[in-house]
Image 1 (cartoon, one colour):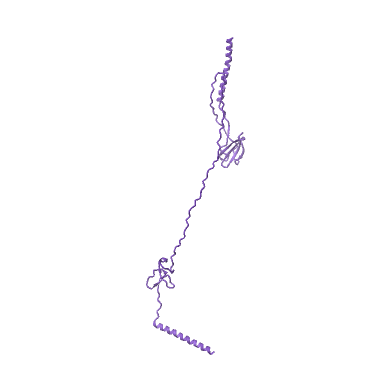
Image 2 (cartoon, one colour; image 1 turned 90 degrees about the horizontal axis):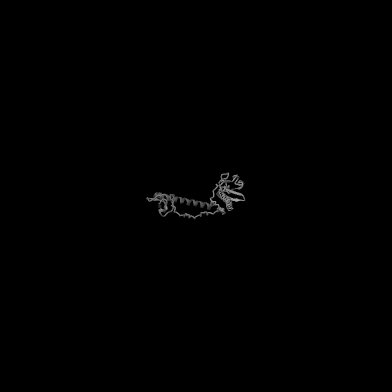
Length: 250
């Protein structure tokens, strides 16, 4: 009986050990199985007008926002099924979002070696950690402002210049005359230093001219002139007497 009982006990223990081996193998296969690929959406690289993508906003309420160009144009898409919801790009929004399919990556795990024991094997649980997304912050850039620099301006100073005197103008020195000749107290056209030359003759002031001598009366001419004047005087007296006598008679 004891032998049978031992045999029976062995018969019960062997199936239980095999079960543990099979369960451990299945657990290892599940841990080594690669994570299935998940579909994700992104903005198309450019809109229908050729404007490049200029960023996007995170999903809010199942709506994804894509920006295009530099003028603030944007398109609204439904995450499911990834189709256009509203067009704020002048009718140039693409009809659908771009679908990105990541490549499945095998996750290395610790392999548990199956051991025919009654001790339960602990399985490590992976915990996903959220990674904060970088937030773009607008930084004000200082702008250089040109400051006008005062420029010294030269002011011309009027200088009175002595104007040379013309011919015939009164002068005291030759430097005052344009001709550089001061003769007989006037500006002359030449040095006028010859005999019987003058530069101040009436009607020819400023021009060097020979001096014209007054006409000389001869003795006979003088006598005749005196007689002529005397005769004219006598005739005049007689005429006056006759006129007076006639007047008294009347």
